[in-house]
Length: 432
Image 1 (cartoon, rainbow, N blue to C red):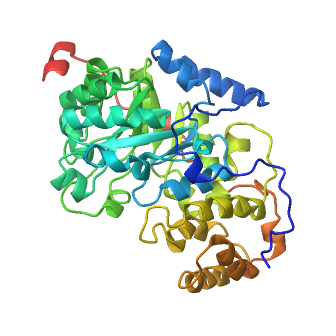
Image 2: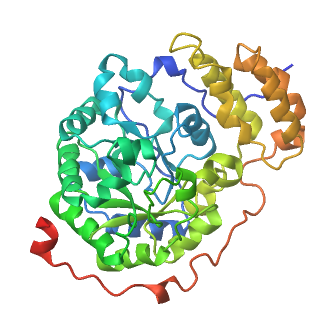
């Protein structure tokens, strides 16, 4: 017997995925009570955002991206984003990076690549590419799916992307092209656009070179939001994992950008692994914080605190038992939808494997899951076979219980380390 079968949920039922491929109006929340700190953060964020009138109307449907989950290839897919939204109502979610060419060449199969459930809002589509015509067409095709923002990838160091693909972080070496690309993207959508980048590439790693990139892109296009991964990228053949570890973090570059570009909005990324550390960044003046692998590997411990600790919203009180019941409905609605038994049980259940991290029964749960992948045909049967490993006390513990861990001093003294102020040489910077 499924351990959550006797529970009646106090939350709305999940809309089956096949019936809501997104070509319908956005959903958003109103009248959410916030504490004084959160009101100040929201007001401060919008004071730093300069958007066209129609863009502001779209952006203001939701609370601002004080906390967002980074785009991660093969991780932040529809399944993960569904789970993430069940845990946090206010975190901004990003898709995996989609190459513009994929969108253009798959016009007959766009639901597979761009479709998602309306419960995922606010959600950002990240695209990559180096051909203006494909970026324009891909953006136009994505309009029907009502993403809340279009983000352009200028930060991925993968050899497949920055090497053979000639885009990703390599584009930081050509800010004039990035400005043109962002103008093309913005011209083909009515939602805000943004750039995700590193602080430098190889030996092009000075603060002034980073500022030149920001200045050129923002001057040549409507881009007003930059997500800054506070490490440079090395393109000498090291792996993407090493590119997240070897180059040192330079948070002082990020905070100097806030000083030198007061008309722009910046989100900080890199090395931030908990809501405690996210709050530490916000206290020092960050406009927003983006968290990557910690939100995937520890979803309950990380996303479970976002709404209360970052946004000041009251706790939903939802439990993992309730989340899994809703996820079961979602999972059984999408299994095999793409044909050839895809997605299968393993793919749909993949994001769940970290839901009980550090909890009693976690090891046994994973072993049972590995066995169940071999023969289970429905999420219902998968849960019947595996959840016996998890104690009721864990399944029924409400969200955001306990005190989150993290380094409260992660950004201590960062303002004492800021590089000298940037002064743009306007004509030279724009046309170099």
